[in-house]
Amino acid sequence: MLLVVEDDTAMRSLICDEFWDLGLRIVEAGDGDEALQRIAEQPPDLILTDLRMPAGGLDYVIRLRTVAPQCPIILMTAFGGPKVRAEALEAGVTAYLSKPVRMSELKAAVKDALDHKTGAHG
Image (tube, rainbow, N blue to C red; front, side, top):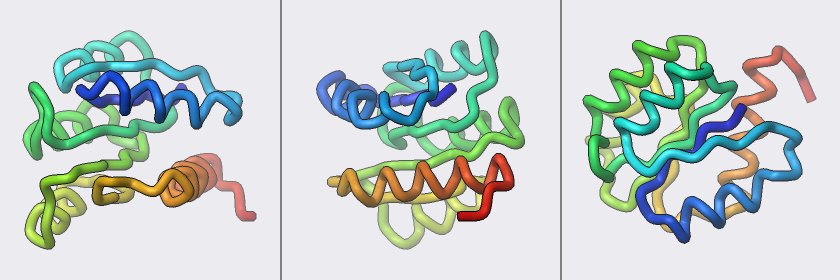
C-alpha cells in the first residue's frame, strides 16, 4: 500500500494518478492526523508525504517513524532548506524532495525506496 499524504487536494490527486500503474493500493490522507490514522488501520509499504500541512512538520515525521519504523518515507516540501533537509533526514526520512517536484524524480525515488524495501536489485 502507498500512503499519499498531501493537504492540497489537486496535488494529492495528481500524485495518486501517477502511481496507479505500480500495482499498489493507494490510500490518501489530507493531513498528518489522518495519515497516522491510516497507518494504524494498515501499515503502508511506502509513505509519500508533504511536510507543511495541518498536523505536519518534523514532529509529525518523527511520529511516522515511530509508528511505521521499517516503512520508507519520501518527504516533499516547498518550505525547506539545508537545515530542514538535514533535520528531516535525521528524523528518518528515506528521501527528501523539494517542491515543485518533478514527477520523474518522484517516481525514481518511489521505485528506489520500494526496491530497497523488498531487497530487489535492478
